[in-house]
Image (cartoon, rainbow, N blue to C red):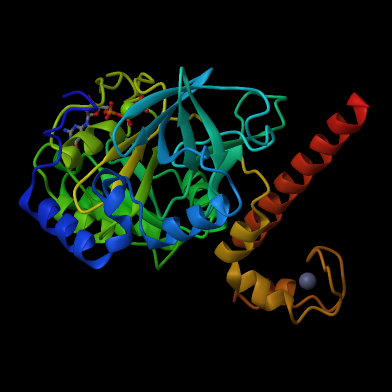
Amino acid sequence: MKLDDPDRHTSPSFDLSYQLLECRHEIWKKFVKNLATLGWNSHWQKRWDDAMNGSDSTAGVPGRIICVEKDWDVVETETDILQCERRLGMYDRKQEPAIGDWVAVQNQESAFIQKIITRGNTIKRRRSASGDVRKQIIAANIDIVLITFGLDTGVNANRLVRSLVIALDAGTRPLLILSKADTVDDNHSAEAIATAKAIDPTLTCLPISSTTGEGVETLVDELGDCSTSVVVGASGAGKSTLINYLYGADIQATKEVRASDNRGRHTTTKKQLLKLAHGNTIIDTPGVRSLGLWQAAFGVDTFFADVVALSEECRFRGCSHSHEPKCAVKKAVEEGNLSAERLVLYQQLHSEIEENLAEEERIRRSRW
Ligand SMILES: Nc1nc2c(ncn2[C@@H]2O[C@H](COP(=O)(O)OP(=O)(O)OP(=O)(O)O)[C@@H](O)[C@H]2O)c(=O)[nH]1
Ligand SMILES: [Mg+2]
Ligand SMILES: [Zn+2]
């Protein structure tokens, strides 16, 4: 099915929610139908009004970036899907467009983005190439991060912690998707859930099968209405297959994993935002090998709230919990109230962020 197929959303529930929106928000009438399916609501209307305050009438129309290519961005508006060329000087170049961004787009002889509406948040990581000390925005304006592991390979603890930190850093809600539930027995699923709960007892864990549909209804409930989620995970975890199931058509390409080690074949090569029912949107992402952190100190402190609370009692402000006397965190480890591994992980993740910052600063200075 093509992206601009007009029959994409014909479910009765969608029509009903659209009608409700249209009744409630008279002001949106001009562009409520398609923009609402992209996640537009009164919050974005307000940001749009603020951004346009003082702009002239050539400020363009609202749209959302649904795909980012190397040299252009694809923006969906109320009426069109536009290929927007990148033009120098049209918006702040430091703020590169990201999938999920709301933008003001001009469509004259050619289409281009004129303004990026102030973001709610960004999900970001360090670029994966070694020596490339830069941030990479995975997606913008996200409510839910669907952290996906295939039950054929199981939950990788280190990767789960990093994914949680990245999700929490952006103030989003993480959910754990354990895909391919049809390929394993219940004990196997229970083991994976136990691994995840040991890392975060509050984490919602959803075993799901995109073959039988098991667990999908629960996931749909979790997505609620008008949410934007991004699906992240290693190649072969089943991200695109799940999105196809939710979407109701094979819109994203999928490919079998390697028989020898269940690794994926990097089938999805670019991010894509897709519209689901109830005003929900979902972003498919290419599988990544490693997940480096980028300036996610807030996320680390949110995930390690227990360590942060203990450190309030340390004698020295800025205590590194290594050699200082009267350290409440070390005391908690000695008394068995905090695991030594958890403290080491907390310190490692903070060091990683600090090293990235120092390296970035070093590169910046060397350019002068
Ligand atoms: N049996 C079963 N197979 C699944 C399920 N979900 C995904 N698969 C299979 O797993 C393989 C990989 O799925 P993809 O959806 O392509 O994986 P991906 O995470 O999108 O991978 P990349 O695009 O490479 O990042 C495909 O052969 C799917 O058919 C599931 O729930 N059950
Ligand atoms: Mg994929
Ligand atoms: Zn301390």
